Image 1 (cartoon, rainbow, N blue to C red):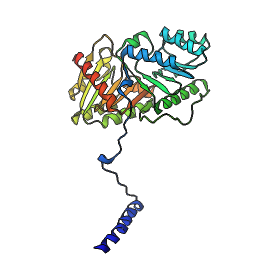
Image 2 (cartoon, one colour; image 1 turned 45 degrees about the vertical axis):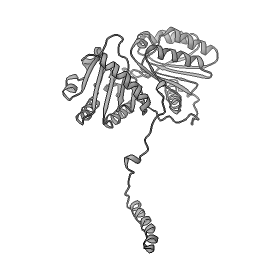
Image 3 (cartoon, rainbow, N blue to C red; image 1 turned 90 degrees about the vertical axis):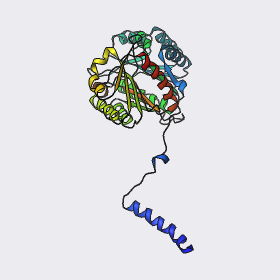
Length: 337
């Protein structure tokens, strides 16, 4: 028996060596795999105008070095004046706006007249810049559902505050867009001392990839609040998971619902309701298995992923998702079939 004990470790080493040499691989059981979880607290979720607007004001007021803004639409007079004040105090203020929205023309002229660095994102014909976020001192950020307009901020919507490494990633995204617009790069460090927060930022076509993975990986529930879902691949992905018993629900904005294949989804067992017209539904949100969520800058359409300039935030946080799930249940109850 003692002889067998001395030989067994050698045989074990030989076995694993043969596995490696033959190109075979093995995985740990799922129960032993490390699960990536975001540390985003529930307090970082800002729901509707008062919470979103007040936190926006306080973050801008707190800026010590830089303020980066990218907005689809921007004409809020209080925010314009606050940015002007911060720019005059020596803060590096940079703003990118979508060039196709009429409200942005007056804002751009007003800011440029006061020597603020503001530019139209150089979209091609037909492309819209829907990205909506704020980065302050490259250490804190807000990712927005609503644009900075009176109507946009009145809508039922969501913003998410970031303070970890995903803030630095947002600053990098802005720097790339700024350089694409002006050919002048911004000074963003190649590494960040901010703690890893495991939030995922995506742009353009990678948003659809992120959504596809989140949908296919869901086993219990997918709860969505959005204006439109018309991308055929995502529609089919929702149908596929619903067929496996996943609880798929849609709360839609009635004004844009005719662009979504309603009958097809209903016939496949997907529950659909319309959000009340007042306030209008602004958010583009999906909650997966009550453990993670994605906030995207626009609806789930083919043009959003292929043509437009879009932005999304994915947060694998059960704590934050629980707060959104509670909100969703309330919205579901007040919505109509």
